[in-house]
Image (tube, rainbow, N blue to C red; front, side, top):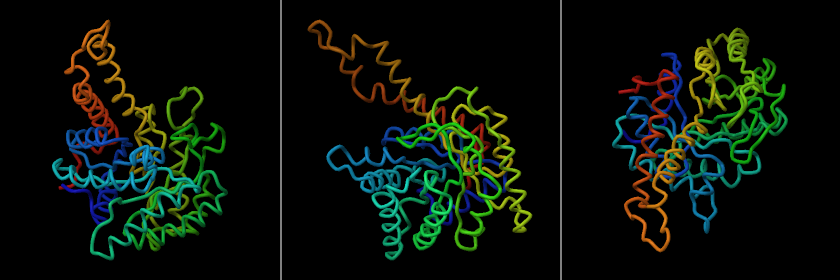
Length: 340
């Protein structure tokens, strides 16, 4: 199947919410890791989301160009071509855009989607994340209101973060402390600013102790039950069951029961990055260490071209990452639930 249309993306989210699972959202950094993610989704018979981060968008444009919008569009065009052959529905997403990068990344991509729509074309990306966790909530939601209106014109979805995710990802970092828990009042302010769908569909990352990257589990206390409490409180006020389409950030290393509880409380998208990065890179490390005398020209030798050909280490690395994507789909319940 090709990359999801706007209607198909909404159907993916509705399918997850109705059937009680979450879509894995896999961060990629290259065509290799994109292919690995697509293979993993296909192997798991799972629809899914492929996303690029702030740093990846710059990296994808090349050292000479250094343009996040260019890098993001380039990967998207590649993805639209190759995704056709995998038999599952894939959405493309930009992850964690802070305020200082809205003008050089997300706003140009949304403008591009509006222009494409005027020509009768679907957007290259199906959703974009505005990360307002570093600014006061009122400013976070003011910017979110503006972006939600633009997203409606572009036929893309907006993802927001209400609360703070600890740890570090791509240069965006926060301490691990009591600020990692969204409150019911925070959620109430979100609904007052953005509505519950009547002004446009959006995804919400409510934080419940989440931490990005690799961390000591003893320093992290996830409270997925908080998501249920917020959903119930706002649901009672709006008359809508589970009014938020929730996103789980910082999920790598989480216990299966924590993941299951988050999904049961309305998580429809879970970001997976650290674990898939490790699967990909550790495979490469194994190849290099076991073939060091072939990938290097030692003592005047010539090495072995077959050993240092990027395909020789790239294919097993992609397979290792694909296997981790399958595992994520199984953990989140999306395996075998692809739309047909």
